[in-house]
Length: 217
Image (cartoon, rainbow, N blue to C red; front, side, top):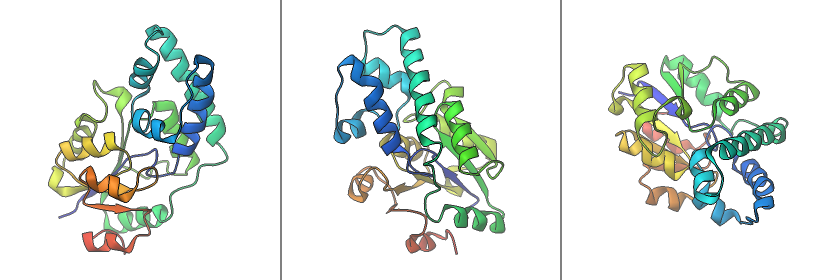
């Protein structure tokens, strides 16, 4: 029986990838890196910043890479401050969760300042039972550890929860943790999400097919 729903943050609770894409373009242009959305999806979406910087700018020292990441995320928060909106149907789904007395969690690869900024800006503060931030763990997505950590905090087994995810790294992490995963097609097409192994691919939380899985009104 369903006991909890776990949510990714970027691209799942809000459509943030277009903002990240533009900020990364601006930040990496001085290094001679010019890329399109296809390259972004393959090399950025859902990944941890240290991995992105190490792969694309191996000439940078760890300190330089960390500084670049910090500046990039600060620029993201400035750009997103007046653009972030909850994905359609999200607030109704959270209200349903509360009525059903189900548990909930956010599980994100976003750096802590970004996660806190987005949760506050989207007016989601105190609505989730726990927030798992990969930066606080030894390994982030696509490793299953972030989702396993959420299960441990909620004292639940993987068969008792469902995950909403939008990125390949997040989907791989959730499936590796043994959790039924629903893909949110904000950045990737439904076919791409099905190829990754999701049970259902939706555009947003208003999709009536969620009811077939016992989710929502």
